[in-house]
Image (cartoon, rainbow, N blue to C red; front, side, top):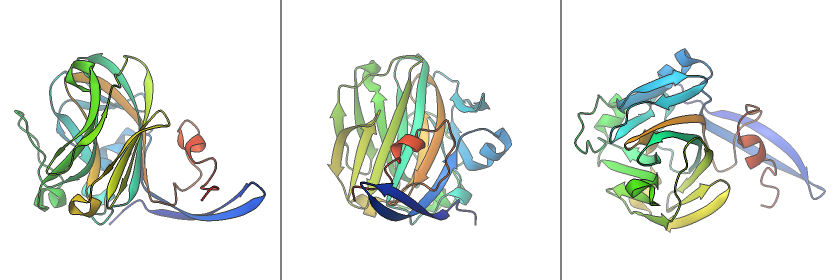
Length: 240
């Protein structure tokens, strides 16, 4: 089974000290090749399209979701960082960034498509999503079905701007970061932190790009030149 796990040894010099790190990229997609990307994603609802090296959700409807396919996810992963860039095109709200998802997702009034087969069989059902610009684009919060919600903030999402979104997930907590600023950390050991990631919208048309999921030692290099990873991991854990 292809899991897109890449291991490499990185040497960095910071503060005069050589630091060695074993990097782990679990999953990545820059949407540069629509045929390759089509194998990586399973849309559950909405109108999803690979266009202009991005992943577009075109339907102004509620609960539009797309998750990573079985072949590109290991259900044992429970310590990872999920990064993605998002841009709102139009609509009432902002982004729904899914993580810790297993089992059947909640339909919330929509007829969902078939889930990835392995995901569909997992129990209990569990779903987390960072709702950025929710409630009519008035605030943001992590919501959950079966888990622990939190991370309340006043962040809203402007049209056409690109946002750098990061979720750091561990077996006993999750931390949400927007444009390199930590918004909140929530202690939560529900199901030991397992569950895959995905992208979603709620009554919003949006574009996504530069998706990467990596382990606690950082992403494998090199990374795509247009990705924020080049700056996010520039220090290569030199302060650890």
